Each structure stands twice: as structure tokens, then as C-alpha cells.
Length: 335
Image (cartoon, rainbow, N blue to C red; front, top):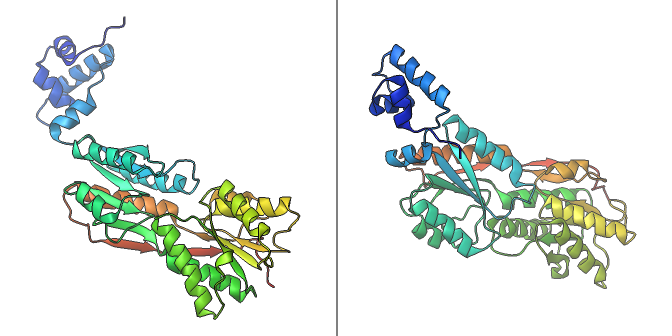
């Protein structure tokens, strides 16, 4: 068995006290340069690795933050997490991902990690818990919301205006001559799903277009959800709509695939519009017209909020709403 060097071994080899080795490791100034050099040489020769977790716990900090999200398989989250990681690294923090899969019990377990001080703070990218309950569970704990803010959850938040973004998307389709527009949504309690559906309704009402509930089909955020929604639409006896607005790019890609398998051409027979501007939306054929979210910036600003809260700043009332952008590609044509 390989022997693991201890701090006492380092002190003995360097000819100093354990307290002096500790001061060198912690970067304290009251150690001579000659002594620092001897200690560092001893650390290198012994391949000594300090117990950073134990040291940070003694200081009352772990230098780790938790990111809660429904699933890592959703391509939307990759850029958000990258923004979080890069901002956290600037302050010496590591990031732990915690997948909840929409399970409220798993969310409660994650909050327990915060309550036991094993993590310094958390960013909620998605949650099924009611906002009031989260406020109660996270009392006194640094937390931030990103992407899926709940107004009843007392925590700083970073997102786009999902309702306005959906309104703008439907208005764009209407301006291109589409009068009958279906909505492939996700159902559930996530704020983005609820707000995008309300934006869809609002735009139709504003344009004086009757809402046909048969065109509102909610199956989820995934490619397979988009395929199921398209198949349900095709099974209906009513006329095929001019366009479909999808709650995510994954849903849009699934819909295009299902339409193609049924012999329906996108965009000649039906226009399809997505949401998020995920990588595949540009690479797919036809490329997907979509709504772009500033995903990296959402993650970066959410991490900035959290790091400030960890340092004691009370920013729970702060809300940042970033701009969305409509990206025109090949899946929508004028009618």
C-alpha cells in the first residue's frame, strides 16, 4: 500500500513546526521566504496534498456551489452551466451539478446539503417546488434562480421575459402571413412553459385570431415530445395549421422529423419555429427559426449574484431580465 504523506511529515522534512507548514499552505505573510522555500520543497518531495475540504470547512466555507437542474440531457443547459463555471472559477469556486429529474424529494435532499453547510450556495436552474416552500427551506442560505424564476421564491433571479419572447415569436409568424398557429408546449409547472404558452395566447388575442385549443398540444421539452405532439396533431381531423410554435428547439426538431415521416414538408407545407437557439437548431435540415436566449450570460450573471450573496450581500430582491433575439432560418416561410 502506498504511504500518504501527512502535514507532520512535511514539517519534519522542512525542519519547521506543523503550524508553520499550515501558514505556508494558507498563503499567510508572516513566514520568511527561505522557510517558505523549504516547506514547498518538502511538499513537492513528499507529494503532499493538503485536505482542502477539511481546511475550508474549518473556515466555514467549502468553496463549492451547487447547480440544480432537471436533466443534463437538455442541450439548453450546457451554455448556462459554462457561464456559471467560468464565473465561479474566477473566485476559486468549484461547481457541482445535481440532477433532480423533476423529483421534489431529490430537490429537498439538495437543500439538505445546503443546510448542513457542505455547499456554500446554490443556483436553481429548474424546480418543481412551490416558491413559498423554497423560500422556507432556503431561509438563511445563499440561493439564486436562473432560467425558471418564481415570483414567490424570495431569491435573486436571472432570465429572459419568456412571455414577451413567445409573444414576439407568434407576432413574427403572423406578420409572415400565418393565421392558424399550433403550440407544442410542455405542460407542468415550470415558469418558462407557463409563460411561453401565455405569450402564445396573448399574441393570438392581440391579432384577433381565435384560439383553437385543439392546436395546443403539450408533451414536454424533448425531441421525442416533439414527435409525439406532431403525431397527435396529424391524427386530428381538422385542417393542418399554417405553422407550429414549439417550446424548445428539441421539440421543433422532433416535430420536423415526424412531419417528414408523414410526407409533410417543412416549411413548404407547414412552418416550424423553435425556442432557445440550441446548437442543433442551426445544424438541422431545415435549420430552425428560433428565439435565442443569452444562455452563457444567464449563467455568468447568476453565479455573480450567488457569489455576492455568499459574501453577505442581501440581493434577494434583485431581478435581471436579459434580452432575447429572434433568429431567422429556413423552417419558416411567408404564406
